[in-house]
Length: 162
Image 1 (tube, rainbow, N blue to C red):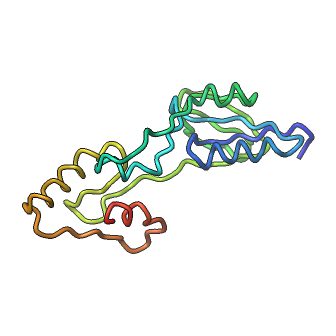
Image 2 (image 1 turned 135 degrees about the horizontal axis):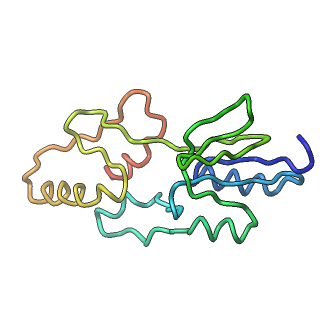
Image 3 (image 1 turned 90 degrees about the horizontal axis):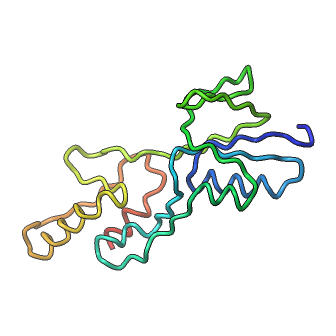
């Protein structure tokens, strides 16, 4: 790579931000960030929210993150990678060239058991709160916490169960 290699990082989650920080520690790299969200939301303790014990979630404006570090932030989504042209297209139609590309788009929770409550984070807090209340009132006689085959990160489920 040249002395001023342009490294595009797609994804504004923990992996994307950590990649930007790591790239900045290397001389001769110029990272840029593509992320559709306005904020990075640190959510590891979201499982505590249904029980009323969660500290406030950390929210970092991505524009501020980029400004403080001299990193251009494109508030957009990655739509297409053009590897032969060493460029990406965004959802808004912008074309961004790169010398290296880091794709850190995260994952999406999928319903593994039809009809089960799949805890995705903050958006499911009220549903889990209702379930806990029903269990406390003995309206829910049994609760099953299920880790489907192939799951690689089951810690949030264990935290909910405990």
